[in-house]
Image 1: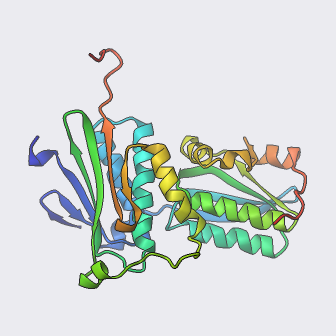
Image 2: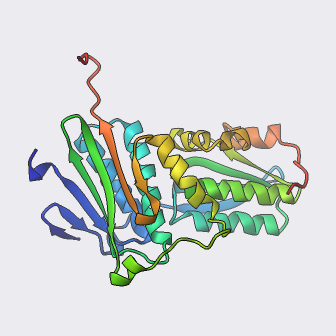
Image 3: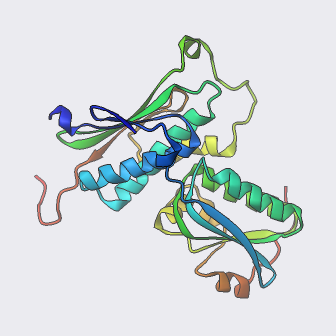
Length: 142
Length: 137
């Protein structure tokens, strides 16, 4: 693997840029010859993490989406950097009993329904998932 | 757009693609909401507001046409759930038309397909009709 294998996009945590992130994922999907279904699922998972960050009272400075090919799988990661030192200190946990909006409660089960082994940290706006390489139909696995 | 090695920074609205559009019309006593583009955290508030405006003005029978929706996430699903709830609370109902493969997958994963009637066309939804569902909490 070389540095050239890494594809990375950095966006502001604003709703109007989530579509750009999906365009990036679509292009990456073509580059790595992923199936349309796999790309569609990754788009959902990444969009959910972006939405977490956008709705956070302490929005991060930016969101970074990285795609790196591994030996067995394509690794997709979303991460964020806090806006400043205060962001590390502030606890954004909602008060006990406060109901999160419905879509926020949907996000985690939805991401895990799509990617059961994904490492999804909604409050840290972080996601890591692996997409095992798909063998061409005319090649049998070991 | 500024490039730093392989890092592309997105800082200009000019490069943000949001081909979202929404419009409403009346057909056979139903309010039909035509949606285009991606239904996500950016666009769903617009759709939510439009549907709720229609319901609050007394249009209880709502069809959301998803034929031209390319992408649906939890924000879009949430719009459908809250719109269905609001409609049924006012003795109305809400139906979906022509969700694509990705939208259907989201509806299935969230179990929403069990509660939201789905039709293959607006004409089917209008002609087959649906009974008003009665007020619920």
